[in-house]
Image 1 (tube, rainbow, N blue to C red):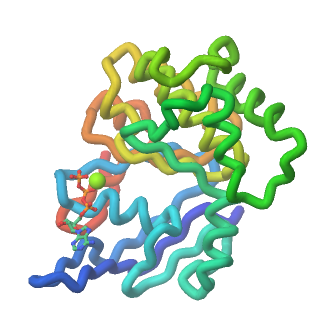
Image 2: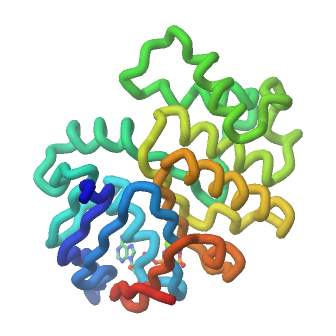
Image 3: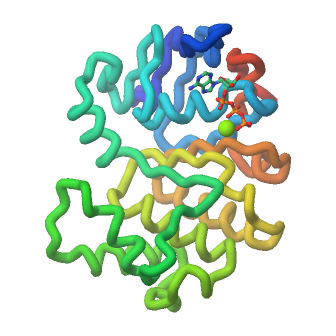
Amino acid sequence: MPEPVIELAGVCRDFPSDPPVRALADVDLRVEQGDYMAIVGPSGSGKSTLLNILGLLDRPTSGTYRLDGVETTALRDGGRTRLRGTRIGFVFQSFHLLAHRTVVENVMLAEVYGPHPRAGRRTRAEQALEQVGMSHRIRFLPDRLSGGERQRVAIARALMAQPALLLCDEPTGNLDSRNTEAILDLFDGLRAEGLTILVITHEDGVSARAKRRVRIADGVLREAP
Ligand SMILES: Nc1ncnc2c1ncn2[C@@H]1O[C@H](COP(=O)(O)OP(=O)(O)OP(=O)(O)O)[C@@H](O)[C@H]1O
Ligand SMILES: [Mg+2]
């Protein structure tokens, strides 16, 4: 059996606020390569906390997290940053595009802090934009694009590092139903190419399109039908 992309065992995340919050409680999760999983649950249930840990933006208070077989909780910050930069792409509800940069420049910026050589950067950005069907808009500024097009550009930026794992926090939260469908079609295509996709969503239409669903309530995660 191949190594899972994600393996969480007994993960807890406590925030030392007053009163303290247990945002994740003893979470076990195994995600195989090519899985397409939706994470659902009420506001404040721990979804973003889980995604931050999976994305190596935050550390569990206790428990272990293996990413591609690497036990990440023991890694120093440099190792975590490298792993994040090469294995993980992020997509958020608000697209975080720079208003005064063109589409292709926004995608190229994904590499600025990475280990990638400057040579070929524009070509790689154009290829990522082709993957999301945005080749015809590469010299546009973001404010000339529809919401769905902006999100496709943000996904292209996330694909620049050729990640194994795409982590999405309400990626269709700002989109109408037609643009939502376009993004979900794109996810289907990326998954067919072998990408592992995790999507936080509160929209039934989005979670219905995933192959697998988990539900979080008060930090406790369960497999959902
Ligand atoms: N830095 C922090 N300090 C203290 N408590 C926090 C912190 N971050 C999150 N929490 C708490 O942890 C719990 C889970 O938060 P989280 O952001 O993961 O919820 P969520 O499921 O993503 O909610 P939403 O659907 O509203 O985005 C909440 O009760 C929140 O108040
Ligand atoms: Mg959240």
